[in-house]
Length: 132
Length: 389
Ligand SMILES: [Zn+2]
Image (cartoon, rainbow over all chains, first blue to last red):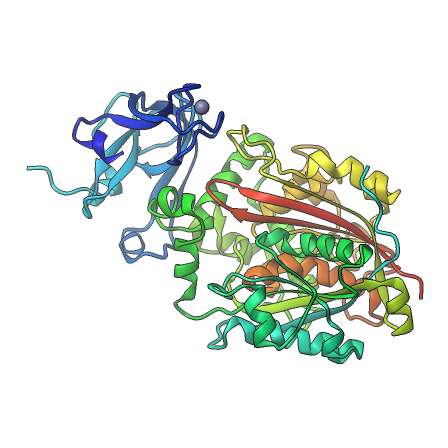
């Protein structure tokens, strides 16, 4: 996933045998059990299924930044993804885009943004290093 | 059709050691239950030849290490990794072991300790999928996942917070008549609605409080239970299903729908014949999914069902989570998957309970466990009946 960050696009493993895109990450295809998975660019476009704001977090960063917005997206390419939500007025069923970013700890994370604007705004922006 | 559970007795309900935090290890709780099982049944430790255990904080040990810790030499052991479905599935495994002669008396025990810093370790390492793909996103643990399920359910069915509040208030009333529950003071609708948000639409009283504690019971032949003069329940039917409906994008049902007809057919009973319902109440929306999945109402109809059905132990409607459930008793880790089953056994075998369900003859107990990624994977349900005395 981290490999896609610098290119600004979402990379996920796809089964070479049956074409199913995999998430959460795994070493075997969830469908045909084949073990030849290729990391390929996929569309981050999808539909917001639900969301919440986490007020009570077990990690100090999120507790300090509460309430922290999180969403769940059905990607057009197949998988269901839970990710940080950078949308000011989320609405069930709205079209969204999921993109990878490198967070303050240099870990690749997924962020849900509006379909029309890839800029990360709101509380989730605090998760990212300042871009010069 | 699955063969019936003929000749099996379920006895000796034990709830043990509930407390908010504890510095004891898991074996103190699990062994404490065993001590109570032996004391209340009059059985010698050496006669326990089967042991089934569910515990998170026993790790890295399993039931195998516990045999040495407690100096038992069972000829049958089972470790139960089913979380909230562990009690019912433990009952199923134990009953088959006794039927098949693999064990004569099985102790089924679920429980956990709860150290002040322990919950974060448990949640952050709960499953490989959640460690990689859920926990990093807000670190809300299961609250975030179930908040999103609850929002979807409300949007699809029109359920309101007041509907969830009815479930929580009835359980709190029941807890007021069960001394082991950690929360026994009445809960008003105002207090429920005014509670602080945890992960919207979930607020404080929608969420269980993690605690320490343990639960257990014995499984043996009816013949053995009769000779020991133990009041007993019998098993009408048991069903289970794991990772049901994996292609549902929005999680609004569990595996119960796939086996409930077989369950009722095997028991020769229907939902209307149940004296009580004990569900796994990690969140009230999951209670609703179980009421629907087990046929007490249709899909999406649970909000209306709880509006018109009293859920208290003495309300004449459907007595539900009669000891207060986890929402009032606290969630003692894996004991949460035993709580409703042990309460059902207690209701069917123990006279003069303060929270006694009037004329209790039957019970439906439901389990739901293990959020691996974005839903619980294990479901199980059992029908118990009062044994002849
Ligand atoms: Zn495949």
